[in-house]
Image 1 (cartoon, rainbow, N blue to C red):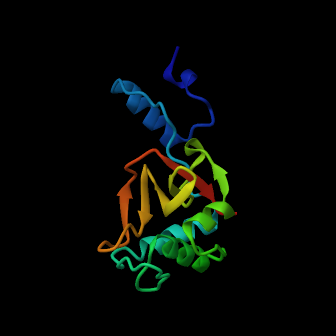
Image 2: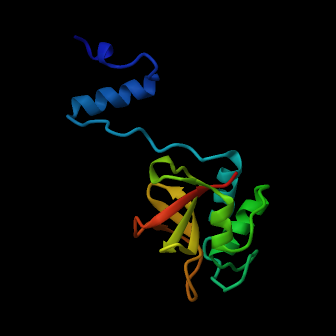
Length: 155
């Protein structure tokens, strides 16, 4: 049986090369590449938030030079054409709740204690978020440090 007969015909030439290379090196392809952004607006919001890296955290600030967590989300999505409420809890209540396996770049990541939502960031892919974390810090991209989060997709 040839390698070609093992590969679905839908694979592109680049996909076939990746498959054959992984096979030749003894590797496996267990997971597909991470999905693209949830929506065009989510992709734009993610780019806008990324452009604010280094902006200082200021409680209650919603840009354009400083942000708190929900202020960054509010600012980025407003610039991308989506209206959201002001606080992390209100933003959670406005999104379509999704599982971790459904998350895509541009979805929102909500940190909670019990039922209380206390922090929000924008999922940046590969287990990372863009957020404005706390006083004394700045807008930055960080690896998620917990799995105790909820995900929401802006409609």
